[in-house]
Image 1 (cartoon, rainbow, N blue to C red):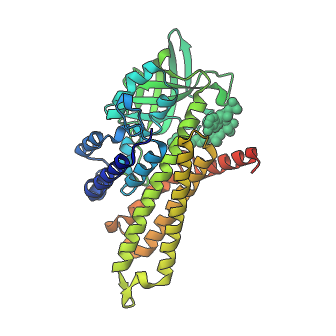
Image 2 (tube, rainbow, N blue to C red; image 1 turned 120 degrees about the vertical axis):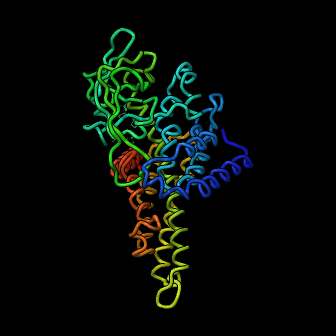
Image 3 (cartoon, helix red, strand yellow; image 1 turned 45 degrees about the horizontal axis):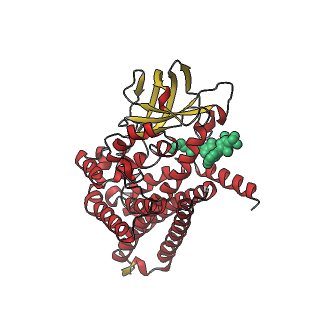
Length: 382
Ligand code: COS
C-alpha cells in the first residue's frame, strides 16, 4: 500500500540524511575492515530498513515497489555494501515467503525479518547451476514429515550472518528442469547445515558471499514454500522483483558518481581553467546524466506497473539490463574525469568502479536479461 506523499517524503529525507551523514564518512573504513560496524547495523534496524517491503501487520513498512525503488536510489548514493546488509531481508531473502508463504510461516518468521533479528538469504545458485538455475542439484527427499536436504549452494549473499535461507532444491529427480524444483525455508541451526568462509571478491567489501552446505539436513514439511514443483516459479518471481530493486540501486550509485564527477571537474584546473569548461569533459557528463535519467524513467515506470498488478518480467529484466550496464559506463567515465586521481584509492572512485561490476552479474547476468527480454518480446509479437 502506498504511503501518503508527506510520509513518503519524510522517509526518503530520513534515508538520504542517514546515507549522507552516517554512511558516507565510513565508506573507506568499511572497505578496509571488510565489515560494517555493529552500531551502524543497529541504527539500520532502528530506521526500519530491514522491513521496508514486509507487510505492516508483521512490523514492516510495506512499501510499494515504486516507494522501495525511491528508497533504493537513496541507498545507492553510498557504498553498495551498506545496502547489502539488509538488502536480502528486503528482497530475495524474504519475498518468496511474502508471496508464497502460509499464514503460519509468515507469522513465525516475518516479524523477525522486519525487525532485522532474523537475517535471510536466498540460496538458488550452485556450482553447476548459475544462469541455468532450473538445473539445481541440491536434493530434497521426503522422509515422513521431513525432507532430507543434500547439496551445495554457492555465492550466497549474507550466508555468514543468515538465520533463515530460502533454498531451491530438486524434489523430483525424474523431472530434470524447472518442474522438479521446490523451495524451502531452512533455519540456520539445523544439524548438517554449514556455511563456508566468505569469498575474497573484486569489490563491495563489507558484504559477504559464502557456500552453504547441506549434509542430511532434515527440514519439516511445514517449511516447504508453495507446492512441490513450484520452487522455480518462486525463484523467478522473487527475481523479477529483485531486479527492479537492483536497477534502483544502480541509479543511486550513478547519481552519486555524476555528482562526484561534477564536483571534481568544477574544482580541478588544467590549462588554466576548470576542466568542467572543456566540452570533451562535458560530453562525458552529458552521456552519464542522459543514461542515468533514462534508467530512472524505465525503472520507476516498471515499478508503477508492478504496483498496478501487471506482470513486469520483461520490463524488470530490461530495467536491470539497462541500469546495470549504465552504471558500469558511468563509473568508467567517473574514473576518466578524475584521471590519475580516479585510479588511486583516495577519492573512492576506483572502489565504486569495482563495486558496480557485480550489478551486471548477480540477480541474472546481462545476457540472461537479454534472453528474458527477447523471449517475452517474441511471445508478445513485438
Ligand atoms: N515468473 C513466473 N514464472 C516463470 C518466470 C517468471 N518470471 N520465468 C519462468 N517462469 C516459469 C515458466 O513459465 C515455465 O513454466 P512452465 O514450465 O509451467 O511453462 C518455467 O518457469 C520454466 O521457465 P523457462 O523455460 O523460461 O526456464 P529456463 O530454464 O529456460 O530459464 C532463465 C530461464 C535463464 C531466464 C532463468 O533460469 C534465469 O533467470 N536464470 C538466471 C537466474 C539468476 O538470476 N540467478 C542469480 C542468482 S540469485 S542472486
